[in-house]
Length: 185
Image 1 (cartoon, rainbow, N blue to C red):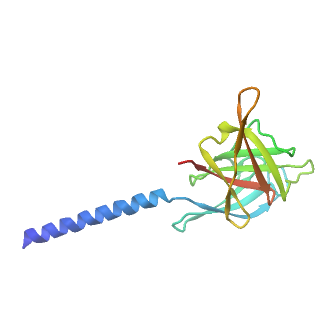
Image 2: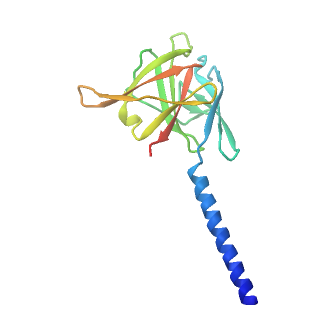
Image 3: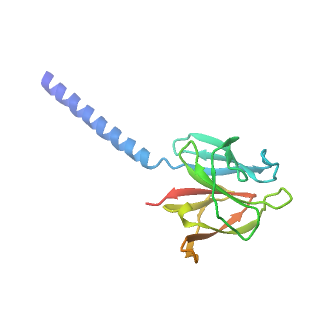
């Protein structure tokens, strides 16, 4: 009887370990955050209207983190976090593009077009051209005002110098656009 009870206990423990491992690996594969832009506001670094956004990231497990992200200088919660993308151009002057990884592991990009009057352009589409190497290996998803995401259509071309360029359109809904950079499978 003792041997049978030990065997049942060992089988139960093995089943728990297998199920726990499966649940753990499933959870690790779905740790994708969703983003919701709560507001656009005047930034504290330069006083530019609509260049800063407050964004809430939510995990599938209920955890949330809120970030204040500046599209003009790349600060996140007042700390220099995002890196400026060099050699980018658009159909508007004052283009600022920053990208990097937040402390929750999400890789993001911001796009702002700043007018000379300390205002980020709103309700316009920016035709962005940047080095392909800046986004190589990623799909880009524009976070819309309602929290939904739109996959950006990216085309490429080569310049006379042999460099590859990525071209895509970004709708500047509230002033600064937030783009999630999702690794390609």
